[in-house]
Image 1: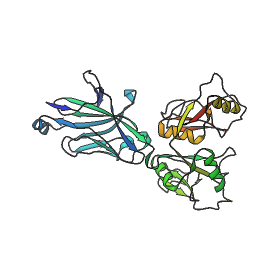
Image 2: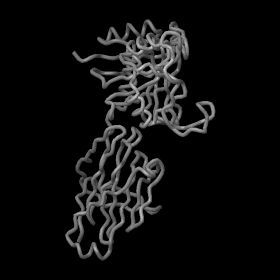
Image 3: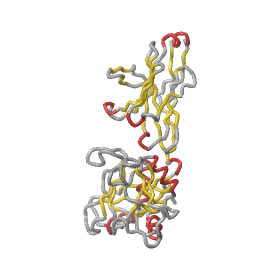
Image 4: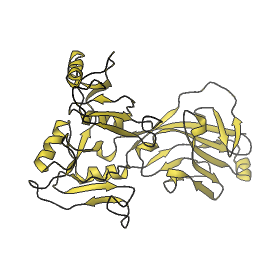
Length: 341
């Protein structure tokens, strides 16, 4: 009889047919950690007590990314003997480690924030079917922070280089380096407006080439406007915010607030009104998710969505930008930030 070091026993779906594991107490799901843009191995191993039976029958391995709603599960990889197939966004990025005949560990390359979540490894060896689960946490990555595009209330393409530096500093961030922008592009950042980098160049990241963003003749990449005059030329800026050294949160209030009321409400709560850099860090590095538009310190209104869904951000995880509304408008709540003492 073959056995598996079982992490979590669950119900599963295989090739359109349902198979339910016997109910039994489930130990906690293990975790794996990866850096954005790096590689990670999710362990899964068949511990065979009868190698002769295993060798005669062989086994099938199926990896699945598990959603809260089982109907939304994503196929990752299916392996049967010498044949392996990968699926969707995992195609070409995942493969089995196969250090030996009982190793079904999954290697994921070029990890993105979309890869985080719970994974299920199922091994079918002809004698018994076993599963184990592991949760993948994706951390700030090779850049240990988050890159975000920024333009001021007066509109796009209004910052010379000195103003760009001030703009990022005002959002508790710094002007991004090319390496930071490049890592963000590898992680899926696609932005059609050119922005300053800290070396004085102006560039922009494109993952989905299109006609109105530099054309379709060139493939995905970080595209450059070169090194324009720092005083005269006007662009947006790419800022870089590090991991938070404090607590970012939505302040529960009975009524909607003007901008001045929002600032005061955070002060009354022993905090400050959050900056754009705080929201991006909380969203990207901590998975902060809230479908409520709220004031930020620069007078903008935004909200962070880590789990795309209808009426919030249906197609992608993103910080949604509402705009720079009239500060006397009582239509929004507020996000606050409380620095660690």
